[in-house]
Length: 295
Length: 181
Image: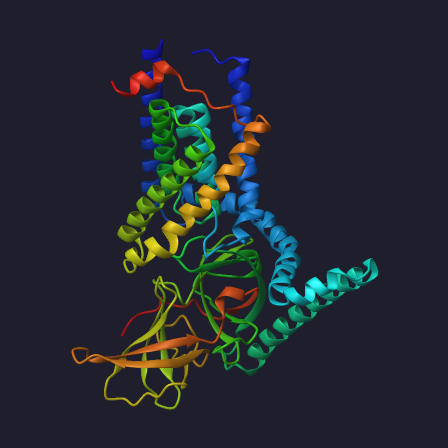
């Protein structure tokens, strides 16, 4: 009997390994409309309402957590007050949350009104419902999908509260890379696979803004003989077909030069603080865009 | 092999655990990040099932938990399934051989499994995706997540054993001997 058990156990193990490898192979080889991708998209569609609901439920708790962390001493003082005051504090947190949400949405509208987008560009505001679980990739999941007109390669912009070096807090977030009926996956510009054709205002130098697994943004392919000063603003150049021109990306935070390198290495501080992104705006640019290319 | 009532109850409990993992991971755990990483409940439960039920159950649970993780984390279907099958199987074998089932053992086994799974995941990512920063990821992703997974696993293990969703660990001498074959 134990011998049979061992054989059975090993057989099941081998079958599971083969099944996993087969799934993996089919996942990579088939198109986005293939059966395995369809199963995965169906699963994502089942999970997406849960995630959206979770995001809504978690939001007050997350805000409460940040609130407790930043003004812990004030919170301790407040704890000593009567129940009525606690109720009022609860209301205040709720109102503050609504005010912050309004501020963020206003910033997005501001970005929409002041930006110079191609004629016919439509906009949809989406809530961030998830983010990449590891640092290998940098992406967010949003609660809008193909049902709302979201398509692969559409650019995404966002606005976050101003903090530290993030000047206006408004700028390019990334592009849509996967879409289901009700959700979409947005590759952030800090992802190591991301590249954005950009130019530096003031010097007109052009290059490619690339992400990295460390979250650092670097602008590459900028000729050494061009003058680039820190604090200059970097915007999309519009080359490559994915991102329309003149979307703010970030500012030059550091300019480096290697004797052996024919290009400058420019560190970029993104305008958007990707850690606290809660709403974004998908730019539904007319015409099917082509994928971004390096020069 | 006939399927008795006991096996059906065990399968039902495993299914319940899987549903709990999907719900908790998507609703709660993915929103709590410490040092920039989040715990992986799918892997933690795979390791706990392997410790308490054995390598076969660990591998089967790992396969389905991996599929759940692939869907929840937008990974190519089969990637995490493969890694969790290996984790479930080898943790089960390890426990059968060395008879480790204390809370400290759980902590250590989960931490090591998490580290190895992430290392393998990192190698797959390196081969198929971003090529830069593999060694950076050891410090910023692999070690922190292994520690967090281990710390989460211990109370989850105690809770699941007390609520009888997982049986108290048992080691089958026959299976243990067979490991050396």
